Image 1 (tube, rainbow, N blue to C red):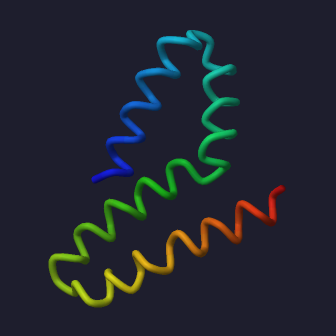
Image 2: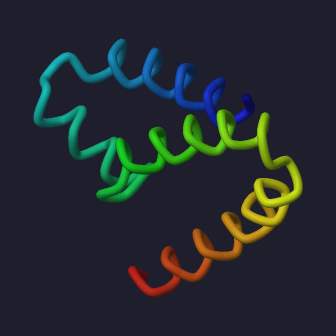
Length: 76
């Protein structure tokens, strides 16, 4: 839910400040990287799976920030 709220706030601010679509795309790439849609679908899928397999999803939620940190440090 926090990720969805952050995405909504970021989208609102970006669309207000950058009316040009190319500028918006550049800002989205800086914030989310190339996997903006992929991460949104991943969060949605994990929320659905959490209803059926909460322990598996709990482990995945622990792994996600570690994976994000490693992939972000590899880009830098």
